[in-house]
Length: 189
Image (cartoon, rainbow, N blue to C red; front, side):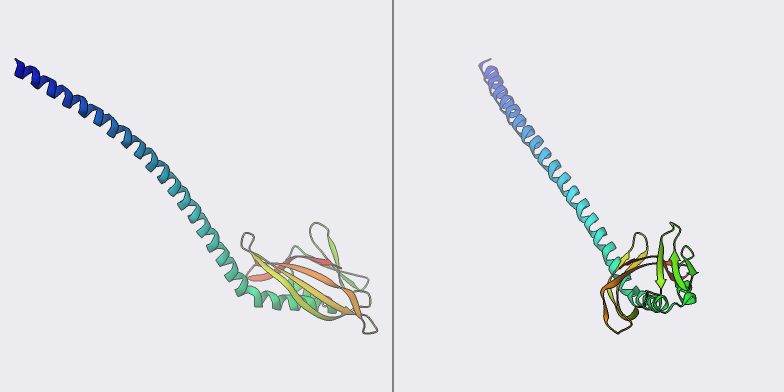
């Protein structure tokens, strides 16, 4: 009986020790699981942020590529527009603008109107003659598939003197019916 009692005590101590060790291990495993879950969530968040950043950079790269590819076409169309509006060539201007813009000839002056009834004088600029023009800036907008060009026009008066300040012209182009057309414009005199 003493042997049985001794065996029971040894088994009880072993079981109690095992339970104590098991509770410690289980507690540690729970803590490790929480840490791993937090780390995994942070990694997923970082991955999602990096994927979004990559997508944004790819979109910007495509935009820059298209902007570069279209520059020569848009700048040539802009040159034609500047020549047309500074020489009063109504047919040339009409061929460059979209159907939403209307060229109007009133009292030997050319005006351009849009659907919002904004009206700009295209020709003549009261005794001024175009001396030179430069592209001041350009931008392709991939969201609206439009190309915006900023032009600075330099004029001379009847005496050949530079007129100050220069005129700023902005042209917005959109691809319509397989052609780039001016869909809006603005002057800052």
